[in-house]
Amino acid sequence: QVELVESGGGLVQAGGSLRLSCTAIGSIFVNSMAWYRQAPAKQRELVARITRDGRTTYRDSVKGRFTISRDNAKNTVYLQMNSLEPEDTAVYYCNFRVPTTGPYEADYWGQGTQVTVSS
Image (cartoon, rainbow, N blue to C red; front, side, top):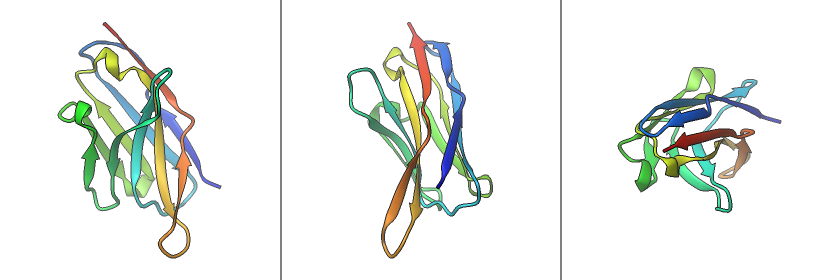
């Protein structure tokens, strides 16, 4: 079983910055890492994903403001969030995809960390 531990959420004013981190407890091989978020009464949505070799994708609304990065040696993923907007308020979840057998992967999730942006 893989445990992911998140940190870095909090309350910030619009225009401010936060940095989230998520670390896997134990030694595992991780393919892609990602951050999702879920606002009240909304579906969980992908914010950004990074492959093992560093290729990144972002949802349009965060491009140019958020940066995802990873440290493979530490099994840690980061999300640097700048120019935060009230619309970014949500619970943020990290996601690790771990290879199982053949082409298959298993998804693991962090416990979630609250990010609140005040206007």
